Image (cartoon, rainbow, N blue to C red):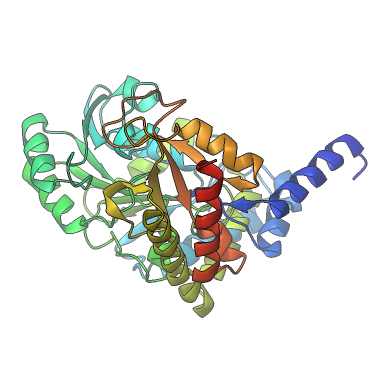
Length: 390
């Protein structure tokens, strides 16, 4: 690279990534093939529109790449192209979710998702997000005792508020989701059911986590977490008389975006093919084994694990413990100085600021990619314990 300043910074980041224990639940390490596609000459091409309907010339290869990515996405999740459509142009998870609302919910309509402090995402209707400004947001939480979803309470709220769309899927909820119950709730109030499986997509693809496709109308996901791909997103929608796919396609383009990032789409296609391999199933199951081991070991060492444990790739640790411990920010800072990267995170019934909350979120997808197993997780838990109890 001729730009030595940028090259130096890239090398510094490579060194940093190799030198730390990465427990960020939203991160992973991609393959060399994924990187090569992302950094290819495809970045030079402008391909505004969709395959077969572009506004620029020279898109024969572009059409093939986008179509291949769609085919691989449907195949990976065992979906019939006669029953499901997929949009692969969304630049990331937040614009993907925004596009679904723009396509399916009238401005000022009601979207219903989990509250941020209980594990929801900014784009599920939080007040500082565009999704909380353009639509009325109704938010459900978890049971204060079990710290798990109370589906009866969610149903009662949905029937009262009558949302246009209900979002199931979270950014910091460590338990499996009962998609069947969410379907029943959506039907009871006449709402669309959208599942945001950004965090668990790789687990679903690997058969380690339940699939939402039998129950959802729309499924969104990023590709850079457990799917181990680039920063990108997919939007799946049912093919029926409601023409959800056409509405969502129009919301992406021309509603939100111009030309798609072909290098990103090709890179996602590579990751989707990698996730279809037999060894990925082993990887997905190992993620859950590792997370359970890490959470259980921390619990044995005296740390309170939100909801008592985990079923997925992430767990929430209450480091504050009603003032007897340390804040999430201090915990994150201490761990980073020792080479362990986590993120501070709110927990249910949060009493502190989101910038200095009561807990941390830990995930094992990245370290599982590096080959770590249960014995390694026990050692990491003990190291965390020592650092935080100094």
